[in-house]
Image (cartoon, rainbow, N blue to C red; front, side):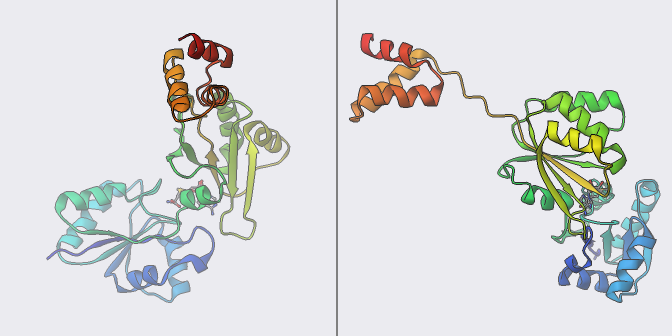
Amino acid sequence: MSGTLYLVPTPIGNLGDISRRCAETLASADFIAAEDTRVSLKLLNHLEIKKPLVSYHEHNKKESGPRILERLLAGENCALVTDAGCPAISDPGEDLVRLCAQAGVPVCAIPGPCAAITALSVSALATGRFAFEGFLPAQKKERRARLDRLKTEERTMIFYEAPHRLRETLGELLEAFGPERPISLCRELTKLHEEILRLTLGEAVARYTENEPRGEYVLVLAGAEQRAEAVSLEHAAAMVRDLTDSGVRTKDAVRQVAEETGVAKNALYAAVVNG
Ligand code: SAM
């Protein structure tokens, strides 16, 4: 029988965020696959866990992935960790999960720290529907094309960004979405210098023209305002009649429907009275 691949999220700053279940999973796995074994060793030392580590990262995944799969198929359990946060989310793991799924190896994801969700929850922007965009493409042309496609996105958008690219990215966001679009810059989450800046894009660009970006950032950008469906005058008049039939005064019904639909009050009134 094959073993299980466990996806183990690790703290994005505060070591206290490692859960008991994550620590137990690391302690009971046969081996740990880590993005950077030196980084993970520090966490394991903190937890007083000694385990064989293998390296699994972006540049060796083609060779390392099948080797890990072979061990899983032979019955060993593997815990996958990255430098910080949730494996497979803008981090190595996606390919290994797919490899395991294709080979029928069970994959168990343990919930835990994720920079995107932590930022979204504290952003004070709409959380009901969101689009995780991760890192924008490195090439300018592709970045522009991606941002162009996002111009009409109504869901809240989440971006990861490195500090040395923050200014450029904010400039491009400003160009694509305009200065009034609200953005929450979530910096150094769970760390000593955690800071949540809830600004407009114009204010964010101005702030980082004067100040050097420092630390790690998640950018949470408000979606485009929902455009009300265009409602015809006839349809709006019918809505008014429904209201008046249920006892609402014509004047009040016209005002209410005009507000809801954006149809001009005078034209609506005339359509109802003459119609
Ligand atoms: N898989 C990780 C996760 O989901 O939490 C993300 C890894 S990705 C390579 C690294 C990016 O996550 C950083 O560039 C930054 O945008 C974001 N990030 C990670 N830790 C953060 C923190 N403490 N505060 C703010 N952003 C953070």
